[in-house]
Length: 255
Image 1 (spheres, rainbow, N blue to C red):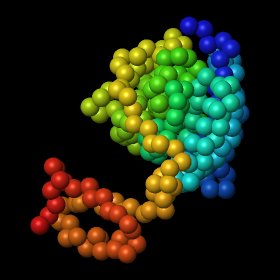
Image 2 (tube, one colour):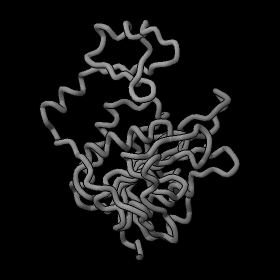
Image 3 (cartoon, helix red, strand yellow):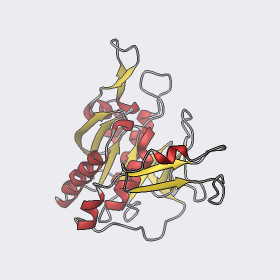
Image 4 (cartoon, rainbow, N blue to C red):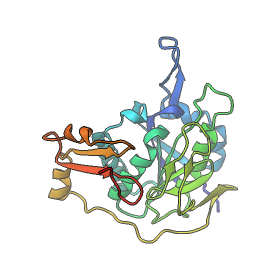
């Protein structure tokens, strides 16, 4: 299928994929704009896809907040309400890409695909994966293959559902997997080859009072470890409205 004439909105949030060397710190910082990122992939022009670029944020993904994600959802919804795009690409750091994609998947209404991508290697390193991931993400968002799939993550040419994807390694370029489910498909030859489809996804109702109130609730997360005596569980007392305990095995905790 030709993608010529299709339109994709691209929201750039920063992250490793947008980093450049910083003389001030001796490291790298998110500095590249969305236009600069996409301009570094000349193969995109051959697709014939119109790219509508939004420089939404320029931060490391570990610094994204829930307010940022709600604002991103609102911006994407406004773009989709105009009915002038065929798909959406979100470019961000990989540290929290599974959390961001899952959050947006719960809020995203409609059947237009929202594709998240990033990079494991920053552009200053040999063999950066940024160009291939951007190229694959635009193809996935522009075509008809992922309609009704909600939010997905595309890295290493694999398409993963937001509900199942996990970052399984800190450095490996093939870090993104879907344990127990596997990828939905593969981006190859300018199209998405689907292996499977997930059943109907759960979408939260928009603009409800419960949803608004939930944003003010603080929930603590405690991971149980060997030798845990429960002392840390005293810390959230009076500071949180809820607690999630990640226990051992089938839900076991030390006596």
